[in-house]
Length: 171
Image 1 (cartoon, one colour):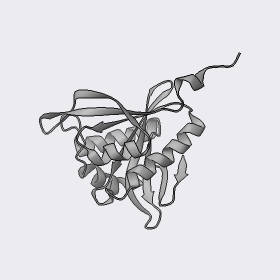
Image 2: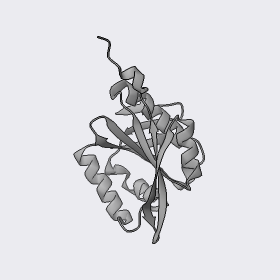
Image 3: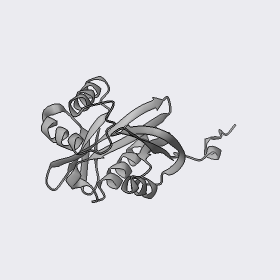
């Protein structure tokens, strides 16, 4: 996959960017501490790259710098979940919004199904980005995430491909 927006290039990710990936992962506040260390997280990404190619790098076109990555999880036959992680110095610039919006355009042309996302309840930048992209909150998962020995609520968002009435077939 190779997608472009005004400022970003989204394409397949490989481990030649290992150092940049480690920095992005290391500066994340959203990795569950009881599940993965930085090394384990990178190893999982590497395994996913090899097995299903569901991780994509996000590059800033002007500087050719890796600013983050996008992951797509296939949770059911017609359901996909999107996740995004940006480097610390790339946050607050609208990259998450732009990357998700760019992927959505590709998604509706190729998959024709709704798209889901999870976001920590207190991550206001993430929530605002999803809302601006047309996602709506569908439920809160109580204590769905553990970090630093504390449990946090997670909000599940959905962006519908079509409303239910548009799925009706004509006979």
